[in-house]
Length: 89
Image 1 (tube, rainbow, N blue to C red):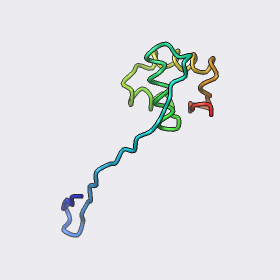
Image 2: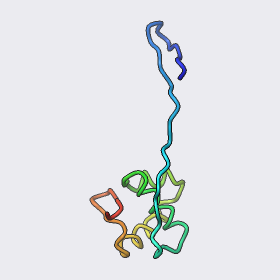
Image 3: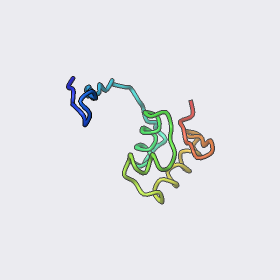
């Protein structure tokens, strides 16, 4: 853990390393495309998100994400709640 002195002498910021815990996420066998698998795993790992989160985090275009989410929804794997998409438990 390191400390940095900021502009004011009484201010400090502590940077601690982020620990990533291993997880066991599985992809349903019904998913064929790598895009569908990627979006599914990402939504599963973060607990859901909206289009902007998917677009920025996965570096995908919105026009590519919508059909993937529609496919996942039709297969009963993802639900939409307003602008938020999440994995069906």
